[in-house]
Amino acid sequence: MSECHPWLQSDISVGRFQTSRDLSLIDCSKDEYTPVTIDDSPKEKADPKFVEKAIWGQISQAFTEPVHRSDQTADYSATQVIAEYFKSKSFDGIKYKSAFGDGYNIALFDLDTAEMTHCYLFRAEKISYLFEAVEGANYSTPLGEYLDDPQAAEDFLKRIREVTQSNMNIKASDKNSDQT
Image (cartoon, rainbow, N blue to C red):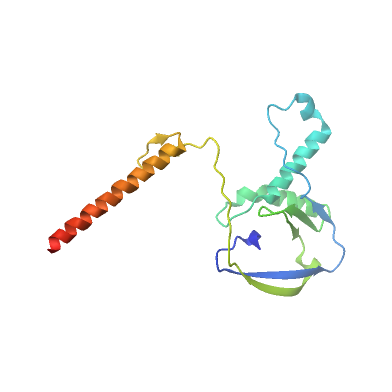
């Protein structure tokens, strides 16, 4: 259900499907993304097993990347081309990792190969996120000052809040004295 990026209180329709025959899927979920870097030795880069692992890992990563409505078609056209290639080789679909958990997804090329047997409606009651600081990030204040230190940025914002609150208190006391 998380694959459809639900918002709080949104309704999500979930179907259970049964295939009409045995399907041949290309499994892009088992290979781990292995970045190839300049630090990799030339010998390692020439090793066919290393190259194959790196390529399948890149394909796996590409299919796992979530697509948003605002994304440009070019952002996911590479996976469309790869999927068309797999389809031309008589695969019925692709199995790929979920970007939102430990599960996986199956995309079928021909919707007639599966029939919906049940349909369920769920409501998103709670959505949870986990955030992690980005290493090496620089911070900028609303005034455009450049700060390398997150604590300095927090101190600056704290001072802005204090000044803003102080100004609000002054305006409130001016307003009260005007009324007397």
